Length: 357
Image 1 (tube, rainbow, N blue to C red):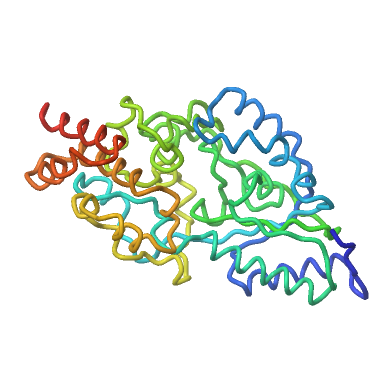
Image 2 (cartoon, rainbow, N blue to C red):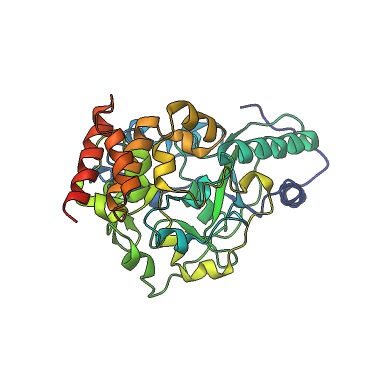
């Protein structure tokens, strides 16, 4: 990294400028931390040793780059963490969708534009503003795109605390927000780490459909519906299929029940508004999509993280959990001989659920 040129301005005043620029760029909150993640590294290594990452092999292959930012980007001494609210203002009530088994539930964060692109573009603009002030400096922007412990860094930067469900929580806005980071070699003043305010509450632990939160602040990803429907590429273990219900991409239950989310705000950005009415759509309609339709309707969306076969797999499970109708039986039978073994297996399971009703 190149040595930053900081002239005629203190780091403290630069920090205030950075805060103002970040708000102008649409970020809702910003904080700065150092790079010491020793405490979080110990937790991460123990979690990985227990195998709770499941098929997410990438969690382990980067070694300590995830918990030691200076190994990921040499020269890094500070992390600028940013937060951006994403809850779509026009989406149908989440609980209503979850209670109607024929409808598809998609995690609220995936209803709009892919957040990676939205935040990364604005982080680059923030870096450009800083460079315009101090000259060339070393930096790199990250948005859930590299081995970065973003929640730990955001906690150290004062953006919130890591809740019992392992998501970041803020007293001001709950948890419906995205995080991004700007690694830098600028010796900026740091912010105070946020304190924990979960108290004795166990709502997120109690509500989890698959009991994936096995203890406060400890998530077994192998049981988590978000993991099973997105990160898990192979067959979904049968013991979790009924609990998945109609959740076809992700799960928000632990956030929906969290009392801190009564303070949450919807996003004012058009980027995060719902697309193609996917907040309230029939499972059967989605299951009949061709691969071309899947690619068209998920273009520019975080849902591109999964393949068309995973999409059909997830929908087959949800259809197996739905109340029996002729339309559902017809849709499942249409795909019982699908070219994909993964799809066929889950369709057969879904049909068996209806036969047993």
